[in-house]
Length: 458
Image (cartoon, rainbow, N blue to C red; front, top):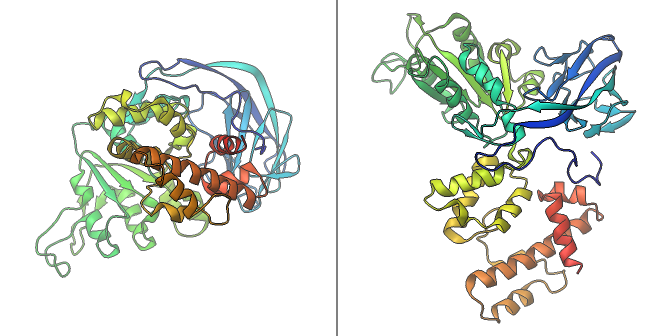
């Protein structure tokens, strides 16, 4: 992506208020044609009606599956972004090139030539404008989201809910993977049966097998009674195995056997126990990379990922920050209007590395303390924030504010504004004035960083 691009000017989504989601968006359709390499002749359509990005690589789960062994398992992703295609390298080994220029991300309009490994792909725009109709709902079960990025997922979710196949839910931490899994359960034919969650990161390694499959009395020290595992607890219903990418390799064959045969054996037991369970799994990790690194079994991956759904991070869900923030405020007992537009606008510009979970914490903090910063809690003494080699910084700047005898909230905000100005000045200087690199290094949205810089130059 160009360093001068702040946001795509023809983005496919608009801000959405509760109950007022737009029902259509305009976007283009593209064709990817392999014109060089072992897969020459293969084509695939990149349509704005797809629920998620199209994957390129040699993994069997990729949409454009290549046999080129110089291509990574999950090499790159392409998605429609208005009248353009957004191409993203997914941490590939050999890189992604557009017209022989290495890129980590780029917007394509058609006519470009993309190279991955020894494969060459032509990008062709098939039409200039297609009206894509999206659901008007601003939620799917327990999942809240009125942005086009979320609403385009809902038709796929409807199909997955009524199916009995295994589904792998991918997404960064805090994007709502468990909520989506529970929503799929509640909208499916097993809704009246148990929904059980097993988090691979929440149980010590020595107890994972027992938690999954149960144990007999006396199976190990402390096993004073027979206990059912989560497979038996979820019998007839749905089992969500959360953070499946963290499951240790020694247990992966046992889980695969349970999934393939629909039967388990308790730790310390001899009898095979039949179980009727729909298994959903979730992960914050890139399982294709884990397979390639030898940390996750390829056969287990394919058994779990019969279908896949990727939840977008909050920073890509245009308009959802305000929708979610007001909902959280109401849940916490305050009117949604309690949150000023100025705060919501600042939150819209933040990158939210913790996603929806972090946003909820920010709303709680604001309602309790009047907190307006979103980059983390400020608990250290304020003088320590000011770089002493910056003009007007350090003890003098803090003492000047304290000497005004202002109310706490006003004084605090003035110090924060000065800190923000000095922080942005320093991080820009460290990166030669390059806004893109400074924003990436600091975690500040480019637009907000540029606004702070503009204010400090007045």
